[in-house]
Amino acid sequence: MNTFSRIIGTGGYLPKNVVTNADLEKTVNTSDQWIRERTGIEQRHVAEDGEHTVDLAENAARLAIEAAGISPQDIDLIIVATTTADQVFPSTACLLQSRLDIHGCPAFDIQAVCTGFVYGLSVADKFIRTGTSKCALVVGAETFSRIIDWTDRNTCVLFGDGAGAVVLKADNTPGILSTHLHADGDFAKLLHVPSGVSTNYPAVQEGRAYVEMAGSEVFKMAVKILGQIVDETLEANGLERQDIDWLVPHQANIRIIVATAKKLRMPMDRVVQTIAKHGNTSAASIPLALDHAVRANDIKAGELLLLEGFGGGFTWGSALIRY
Ligand code: UT7
Image (cartoon, rainbow, N blue to C red; front, top):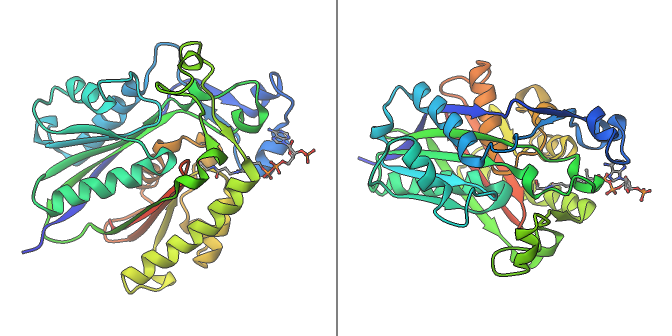
């Protein structure tokens, strides 16, 4: 009998502190109208000093574990997708493992920026399909605010902090039907933080390792590539556009989301939209959107979900899921 993985619980967590567009109007040359019209964002959540990626991850993970009706000790694989790890090492996944009082199972981070959660889901699915794991915790968690130059209007209006999590369990029926992962490092410089441990480390130490983005070029590529991955996912599963019940997209820009929905000829009320309240939370955006729609009782058991994301690298990917 084949083994598949199924999502049996979701969780999401946002820091309490909210930064509105009106707040940003006071610090950079921008306007609420510009941000809403060009991005769809109204506000974002920003972690307080002392609140770290693992704190957000733990809150989201505990809610997913509770929703799944399992105990943390049932988990035998932990993957955290993050660009904003608490420390150089150990991984945020190991820090989370300790918080949850889980011992011995593999735990590691995945770095694929905004596509990180889809990458994590794909890896966990393969661990389960091969019989290596039976119950996986996959988290997307970010304190992206820490790598934002809050004086740069090109980027600071876009991003926010948060975490989303799912528990995946081995099952005889899918579950995750397919995942599709891609990357092309030739586009690295269009969206990047040009400093790290091995390059320009003083910038990291001085807290000036910031996101730089060629916004409109990234925008055009995102629209094109997300259209392609929709086709690739449908084709791989022998499905038609109308078979999809819900699009759960990465929340980078409402105009990108609308373009992908158009490609699927999907009405916007079947597209999960959290961008207005969350902004772009990078690896956390897709699991936060999924959790939001599950808890709102919009997504129901048996429905077919298409998750898709695009981000720095470039990386992009999708997951087709029978919920
Ligand atoms: O999650 C990873 C993937 N990331 C993305 O997919 C993001 C992709 N890019 C985008 O979402 C959009 O390109 C942005 C929202 C970043 C920018 O929107 P745009 O429609 O592409 O604007 P633009 O960069 O072409 O700039 C248009 C104008 C410029 O002024 P001029 O040169 O026309 O006078 C900008 O300087 O808007 C100006 N502008 C702003 N004005 C007010 C740029 N940022 C702002 C701002 N407030 N925050």
